Amino acid sequence: MNADRQAVTVIGLGSMGSALAAALLDRGHPTTVWNRSPHKAGPLVDRGARLAPTPEEAVAASPLTIACVLDYDALYAVLDPGAESVAGRTLVNLTSGSPEQAHEAVAWARSRGADYLDGAILTTPPGVGSAEMMFLYSGSRAVFETHRPTLAALGDPLHLGTDPGLASLYDAALLGLMWSTLTGWLHGTALVTAEKTQATTFTPVAVRWLTAVAGFMTTYAPQVDAGHYPGDDATVDVQITAIDHLVHAAAARGIDNSLPELLKSAMLRAKATGHGSDSYASLIEVLRNPAGGN
Ligand code: NAP
Image 1 (cartoon, helix red, strand yellow):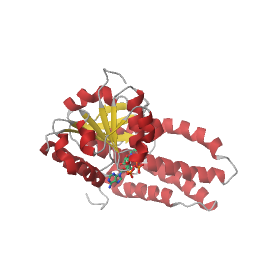
Image 2 (cartoon, protein in one colour):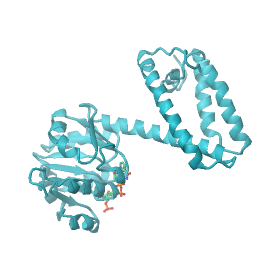
Image 3 (tube, helix red, strand yellow):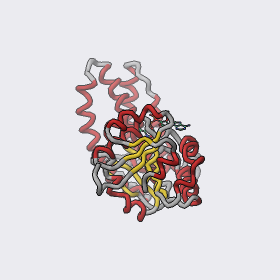
Image 4 (spheres, helix red, strand yellow):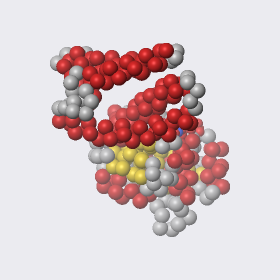
């Protein structure tokens, strides 16, 4: 342990909480842990963590408590019985939830005299401790700045704003991006592997293509902010023609076409509302107005 490192408590030692506690131990933070099933603390105790007998004693052991349990019901189940122990301390909650749950948790902490930051983890446990991985935080900037050096042990800490719901909101948006991207990649992989190309052969080309796609996002973001979608690179009409090639090629190989059909239907709705000669970014209008009115 390192005397100039802040003492930290970690509540919740599932896959993620154990990785968080291990990263803190790696950086020399005196680390107290608690978990409903205490045997999960064994490997951490072997590395120098202190296992507290109760959540109250765990919270009381450190100025900063990081909680990472399954959901908010579990969080309150753990913290409510000894809630007076959080007074004068900081709770950083890395449990996944909704923006509304983050707002409720701020009120819960404030009414008990605790500072609160909400957070979201954009990696899996093996990535914890890497400065490449983003950890999103929202809530008081002063509380964030106070604890930033400790939070940096877990990954790159990004403060999104003082609205405590922002971390959960970004988390949901970014998971949606991940699932859409992964499913698009798997659909493409099903297509090329139908012709005896290995996934490992296709994927480096796909990854390189994602770099170009990221460039399109950067081009389109100001268009979305301006509500103006000049189709000077590629129009919705052109994309509708192009997606038919994908639908045809996949159907001919017996591959499920739900994803491209969904995308094509959004493009057709954009065209129907006058965006045929606009850029792909104009689909935001369809997403924002699914009922199709003006
Ligand atoms: P996990 O391995 O299933 O661990 C769940 C943790 O919650 C365990 O410590 C478990 O205690 C505790 N728990 C569940 N119900 C409880 C209850 N009623 N009372 C007290 N404790 C309870 O899950 P995880 O992967 O660590 O995920 C934890 C959180 O991190 C989730 O919100 C998840 O969405 C988020 N997260 C995970 C990842 C990931 O890649 N794993 C990535 C980003 C975010 P026991 O050990 O006693 O069961």
